[in-house]
Image (spheres, rainbow over the protein chains, first blue to last red):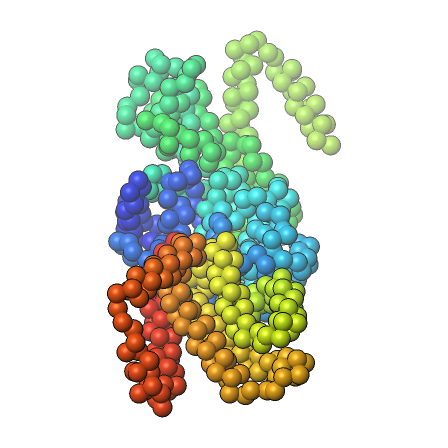
Length: 280
Length: 125
Length: 210
């Protein structure tokens, strides 16, 4: 399998936080959702991938090569809070980008501007949602092969998010292109992410296909008596609630075969996150 | 190609896709030689992961319902309709068996079961 | 790099709208007071260019620019280039402006004085930015402003103290000995300081992280 992005054993230390041995791989033609709490390390990891942070241990490979600034021409970026100075207008961006990216597609950019009804006024007059749409459009309009997006749908209403997700799916029709995006809005991911990578406290907790997670993982609900019967190896995390025990299991079918408990529920990404973070 | 997915169902999405395509093939909605949408197009239309549609197609191929021609796409195979029907009949038998078990335990008669079957068929029409 | 240059120019265009009114008023005041104030133009350039750093900082433009092709290098290159070119452009523009003002005041045009003032302005502004830009890149615009203020204040104080104790009379002697070579020497000093400043800024930005 060809990987468009490889993050290999990346570590970085700060005073109050550290990334420890972060590794994951994104194949061509796939969308990877990068989830985690605030402060878990999503943005730091993305900044390292993009070379905004340069001092770290480990290795990043993009398109099979060690990361270098030449590769930027095929990478589209949306950051959480960094963009063009807000006195500029969308038209200014068009004029500027024509001479920054060789593949800048002015027509595509303007089509997107019309589609989202973005007026040619200074960015500072835009709402948060409009700004995000402009940032996403800008990242797409030079036909990149890899999109790296930090919370691209934050601030967008459900309709806006839906429009953007559609655009992402159009983008991925080309098998040579991939998307990595970090988000809190796990429902978006449940629909279109092919892979989910979950980071907590600077460490990768899991990195699997979303099919595997949504089809195989499950939440078992049981009484204290039943809980005592379960072997520690057979669940990942557990939570003691007011009325019951919740267990996060990796394979619903196997668990069901071994212990015939009544309630083994399908899992959502939200529940997965909460269990992995708050469970023991 | 019309495929309707339930997000709530306990059945994994790739299985729902698989079963619906299978049924279209068996009922001749999809004929031999018909080309299926590409894995990516289907994923986009159903708003699901590409890996999901890939799994569905791969299993259909393994079970002999479709075949892939590299560079061209997935095509419906000539299937042994009887064999396919047999597989579905087996499934129905298992489900009916469960229903009959419940009926016997609770003293429900064969006649009452047959009435229910009649009503359910009418409802679909 | 052309794209980055366009970005700087478009920002100046955006900024200019707020400045030009003040500019006109200042010029009018100068004209009425029979003063040749055209040398103000290069200084206005410096103010505008430094304010672009503020806008950049507000939107974390630098971090975003790092993700563009050859971003780190082009960021610094374009800033210096645009600064130098606009200063030179507006300085040259101030010559006809000067001539116009002196004519309006019915005074004789002193070409030598105009040239000397012009040269002084160019030298002054380019020297100032040579010192300021690396500091801004290193510390960010907010801290840079304070630092520069402290430095100038410090130099002023040190100068005031020194004057009490040291006899600076030997300096005019040195200047008159050099006077034939004064202009070329100053030009060389200027070019060197801009170049050194540029390379220092490049180094700072190449290591910068956000």
